[in-house]
Length: 221
Ligand SMILES: Cc1cc2nc3c(=O)[nH]c(=O)nc-3n(C[C@H](O)[C@H](O)[C@H](O)COP(=O)(O)O)c2cc1C
Image (cartoon, rainbow, N blue to C red; front, top):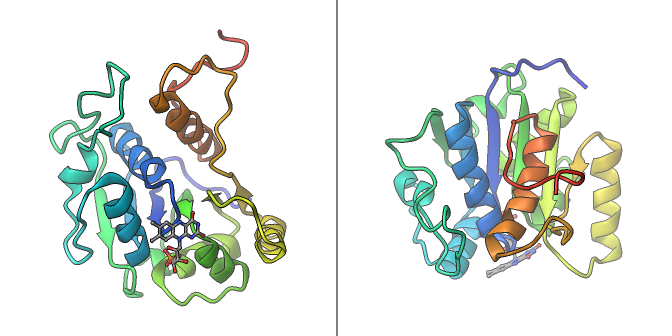
C-alpha cells in the first residue's frame, strides 16, 4: 500500500445502488472530521437518493447543505433526529466534481489522496472498476487509486450476487481494493435503524483510518 499522508483528501463517490443513506451518512460524518473531501455522484446515484431519501439533487450544482443536514424520516436516534452536520458545523472542505468531468484533480494519480470510498457501489460501477474501463470520473478515480496502490473501499449492497459480480469482486480485491458489503452486524446492541446504518459507516471509516465512535465495538458492550 502506498504511503499516504493522513492530511491528504478522501474521495467519496455515491453511485446508483440501493442504500443511499450509507453514502449520505458517511458524507455527514466525514464533513465533521476535518478531512478534505472530494465528492462525486453518478446520475443513477442521484436517482436513488431521490427515490430512497426524497432529496432532489442537481448534479450541476449540488446542494451540500441539503445532504449534510438530511435526517431520515425513520430516524429514532435522539442524536440523529437533529441534523448531524450543517454547513456551519462542517469542519471539512468539500469539493464537488461532476461525474463526467475528467479535468478534476481526482482524475490524476499526481493528485495525492489518502483513500477513496464508493458508497453505495452499484454492480455497474464495480464492473467498470474491475475492467479498468474508466468511462466516467468515478471509475477513473477508482482506477487511479488501484494503480497508485492507495486504499479503495467499495460498498456494494446487491443480494444475491451473480457469478459475474462475484468475479468482479474477486478481480478488484486481487488488485488491492477492500470489498465492504453493506451488511450490518447485529451484535452491537441494535436499538434503531440508525445503529444499523452506523455499523456499516463505522466499518468504512475504520478502513480509511478516520477515528470514530459511532458504535460500541465488540468487547466494549
Ligand atoms: C431505485 C434503484 C435502486 C437500484 N439498486 C441497485 C442496487 O442495489 N445495486 C445495483 O447494482 N444496481 C442498482 N440499481 C441499478 C443501477 O442504478 C444501474 O445499474 C446504473 O446503471 C448504475 O449506474 P452508476 O454505477 O453509474 O451509478 C438501482 C437503480 C434504481 C433506480
